[in-house]
Image 1: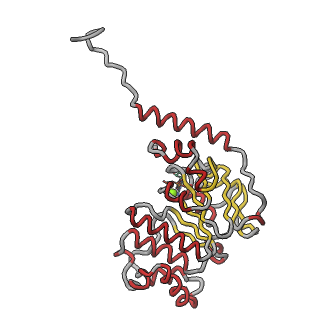
Image 2: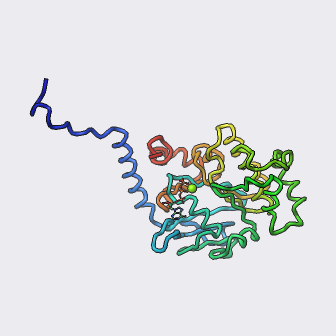
Length: 285
Ligand SMILES: Nc1ncnc2c1ncn2[C@@H]1O[C@H](COP(=O)(O)OP(=O)(O)OP(=O)(O)O)[C@@H](O)[C@H]1O
Ligand SMILES: [Mg+2]
């Protein structure tokens, strides 16, 4: 039986509930970002091991990806950066490591500006970086990958190799295995081990658990804690936001290149807005 005009006019399409809810989440995020625009009060450069303050940076001239982003790291901390895809998390880490120029704002390590320094200058000053992708040389052995990590101080190779393979026994046991033959989790150990070869005091990790099985993810988190307990301060971007907030000291929620929320891992996990906007299933949209 037809209704109205005999069924020739299509029924207006109903917007699925999930789409409506995702749109509401997005709208709420925009509101949060408007109010989060005010600069975070963080004290001065001498108060922090690492201070990135109101940083503006981007890849293409005239297009900013970081829109005034602030992050601090104190001696001995593990600090997490979480946020939606495309929020600028990797960009923030890359800017800190000197791979992208700082357009505005300041960047200091132990009170001295590191803005404009090239990456090897950062390595010399005790900063290690593990990129999100392509972070090992697959055609080289584990040992050769670690040699690349020690390229600025080749004489310290044996000593550092002993320390690093103590932390990651796999690296010593399988030193002659090609990195390309390893599982994703094992490669992450090689990548972290490589960054630790220069004995850094700050380690920047970009999504070290991405693509790993839950067991390996947990192993990576435990290794990060172990590395931290040896005195290395850590900034880590994480896709497994809940677990990361459980193990970190403090976290930053980044959205559209801005600070949306900041607090201790526990505070962020208990903040209903953070849960709704960034940790729930809809928050993945
Ligand atoms: N090399 C590049 N050139 C130009 N734009 C880029 C480049 N890399 C990233 N972008 C852009 O910068 C924005 C932020 O990217 P970024 O990789 O920092 O996000 P992210 O938060 O790390 O995301 P994900 O969770 O997917 O890793 C995105 O809009 C992205 O398209
Ligand atoms: Mg990224």
